[in-house]
Image (tube, rainbow, N blue to C red; front, top):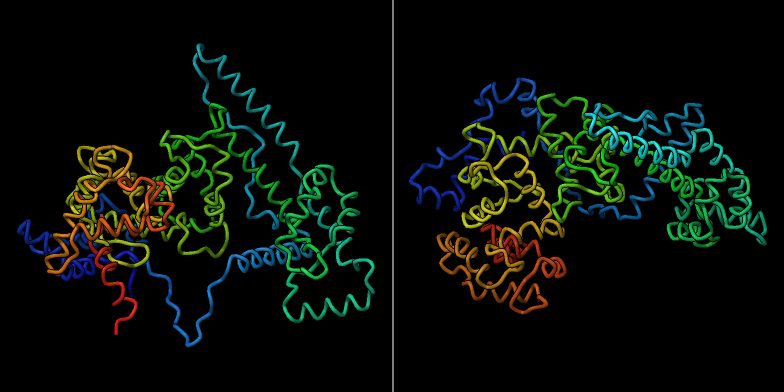
Length: 525
């Protein structure tokens, strides 16, 4: 039985076999087994409760599917969208048959219409306090007027059903039904009911005024681009219903954020973001078994992902509009479903995977990582080995905030997010700031040479023909093709599409070794 995060014994074996650890052991005069993290069973109870140990012990990798001679092609974005709409159709049908409309809204954010009040301020702040409350109430009243009740939404769907599947003029009804049946048999039409534009305009006259305001002709035509009925030019009514539901959900979500936007500026600080997630926890089905001792670490890991991707200027706050327009909110609310992807960062599996490895690195069990402990980092969500250089660790601990020269869990989460998303613009900016040792805003040949020296030393111990710096420098500049031929910026790395590869070549000896031997990896024979 294996796990995504290696056990202490597995890490010990990997360290004994890796050329990186051999190099460090020779340099520091330590045996490989002295550097291996302690076994989980030996961790002190002051660090972990028994329940938390049990959760770690049950952490397993997702089952690996057996490879077939004719592998199934990966699902496309269109397949994902179709599956989502068909699930919504099924949910609608079940809700109407059972009469329990609340089932339709089980994955939506329920908003308490009662505003959370702040603690009573001092006399000097009472005017500002009253003004904030009045502003919140005004925003609440204005936005809540756009909300639709469950009955109004179901009435809207009934209107769509009434006008759906009408024979488009001037077609013959029998001929039209015969063609439609044939298209369904061949899987061309996959949804239950469709509506054309003429029927849509007639149905629109019976809709709620607010829905009529949302469903314009322009919106109908834009939704047509997702329709699978290219012959009769009809739109699945579930697309219209989903659009209205999404508008209602966005209003509900925005109303929910009012309680946490204490200064009414449209931003959330990290503390307020953690408060929002904390109140979401009881509604997330996938986190029901989470040990209470893990909650602070979960809140830190969850909020840091929002700020890592949505706060590029590092001002300590994120726009509520940016949160709502990103896919991160959908990702965390996905935990209300009965089945969740193992790759979901906000899932319990991901938290245990990251936190368990953090604890294994923390050999002195003080809750922080020293630079020596951090250098044992050999973890990747993709399962590949990672061997960081001392030059990179020095630069990282100098650039990022540390406490008495040690890294806390918050800084470690930022590093893991950057490593797992090296091709993303935010991660590239993260690494460029670390590699830019003089704070110039770009990388030049001197920066590349400084970090490549350690990589070369590691590779040359096992490969006398390790590539020289001039060759690597020329290859990097050829791959990136920067605007300034002597300077590489974060924008250049992101634009070239190979920023993750370049970063790996400078900070990870194993990454460069794999790149240099890519022909053998692709074709071992």
